[in-house]
Image (cartoon, rainbow, N blue to C red; front, side):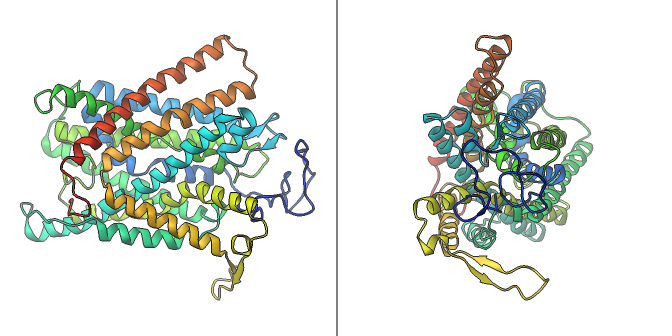
Length: 486
């Protein structure tokens, strides 16, 4: 994705006709589509996926498990992991149209939909994908500010006691996060953020491990496992609240597994041979298996530690107070991780806007011209400054930051994003594209099985969306913009 020119076209001298995507023969510098050699492998892809998957969603899993109970909670977690892995493999098979080794490459999720389904479905897919990416940017801004606030409050509680309210406004911390993202958003494309993904993946394991360790220690301290088979009990909440919160928990779990919307973009960074879909399937298996183990431990031990009172955010809800320095390390790791995850999710959106602008305004110097700025240290190549990229990405970060300030509801936002993106992006489009790609006959056993899977996931997404919107309506009754929330 990053090796093409500003308009997203093949390099000069490697122009291909619309149907002519045959390999160009061995080349040290270029792939079969005329773009610079891709260098990604199973480990860089796994790092990208883990960075995207083990995000802020893991912190709400104890709360989600508390709503569902010991039977439904782990079962739903496992089912979501299985569905995510299976449909991701279907989607990976659609990276190339036709032949899985020599077919035409689809550089983005939307291009894959265009090649396999076409028509109005492409517009629907684009709207859902990019709306979801904007939502993730907002959600990660909220989550990062909450973790920064938690560091401040943790120190306050340590110095002044747990009974002190230690109220902190989230607005300055969202602004700080936004400033950092404006700077990092100038990294041109996916190929150049592998190092950021590696750092973020390490951070995600760090805070997940700390959360797991604190949960285990809390269970040992309590000398019993809290919780019930059916989750939070009627009386603690009303029957209506129980239903809505159970639905919202489905959205939170769906969000915790969502990364399909950037899978094709990650796959486009992989070198071949071996064929990209084989490498992507291995990376998906490694990543989903790893994250599921973490999710099971974090969700289950968090619920075992706190039972019905499990906080909405395991490391910032202050179910834990000590050791305060360990909490600070965990929350700092969350912030660093979210800094990287923000970029991993936003790069496809950045590329789409910039390539579209270059396509419609090929003569614009503002959009297409770059200025080389020498980097005096480290022997790096000059940085290519593009004024359109600088302007529009900065505006995007500012807008998502302002929206996050206006609606800082962590669990509700997570639930809405999970519900809105899970069925169409993780299930429907991969299933439909795979059916077309493999020419699966209508009403065959496999076709019917895939449609049943899609229909079941649609029902889950509708329920999750209803529960999450009900949560937003409830929160808005007592909310005042830009006021102290924590």
